[in-house]
Image (cartoon, rainbow, N blue to C red; front, side, top):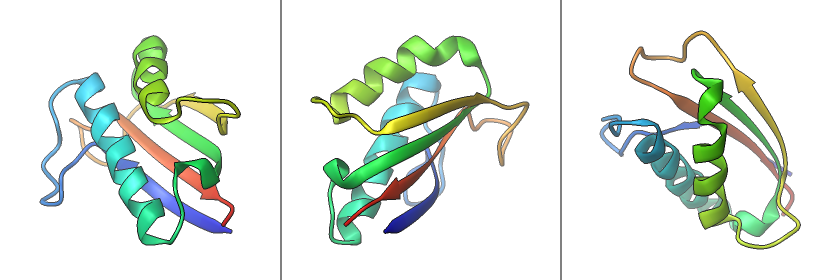
Length: 100
């Protein structure tokens, strides 16, 4: 089992992307890179916990997620709206549990 702590929509220099969709896409890119570094792939992810600062972005989140998880079964997911994340500009953070 691999536990992946919160991935965010920032590049390797911690510069956040602009806008929810761009941050969500970067977050999944970072998540994919992290699980691959651990010797697995997105198909190994069993559970996602998604923290967002605006619950109305659920549809955008699902559209981005579906670009990365293109077939069933998709990971079990919990989508949580929070008041704020680590930085005022951060809009999404994703934790993952993977089974390798």
